[in-house]
Length: 192
Image 1 (tube, helix red, strand yellow):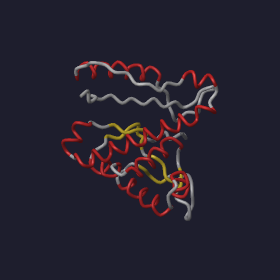
Image 2 (tube, one colour):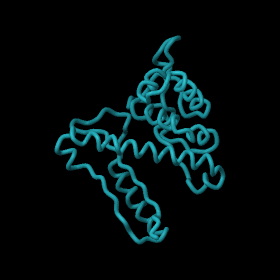
Image 3 (cartoon, rainbow, N blue to C red):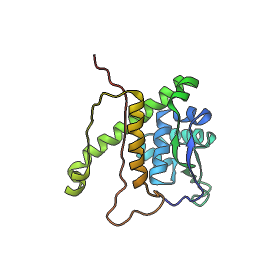
């Protein structure tokens, strides 16, 4: 990601931002801008395999919601460059489900789809990864018998580990490092 010092680290998802991100294409576009830095509608269209008109429309919707903004340091009258306005999104699932259930479900389904696509890309790339990265990677699931409070406690402990290893993603990668994605999904499972 490029250096974007004026960005706010996270945006609280509600209202217009929730409406904007309940569309899976917008969720993907925002993710690409956060991951790879500023881009034009044409660049995003090529990455996503859609037409430029669609990406232009969705970028305007994201801008209206305050999730992306024009990058004034790039482009000209013909090429508009866009950048993410925040480095991340935070949200209270229970609150959103109560206030905007349909939009929230659309948003969460989009997030799940993006996570699944990311996992499949990583699996497809395993054969070209170095043995060290293959050995360091993990694709697994674990089952537990937990009460809601125990699950929340477990996730709090896991978050503390993430905090220990967090780094400024706007800075260049250190030698030998790669950007690593760690996905966590924790949910009750149907047992019958």
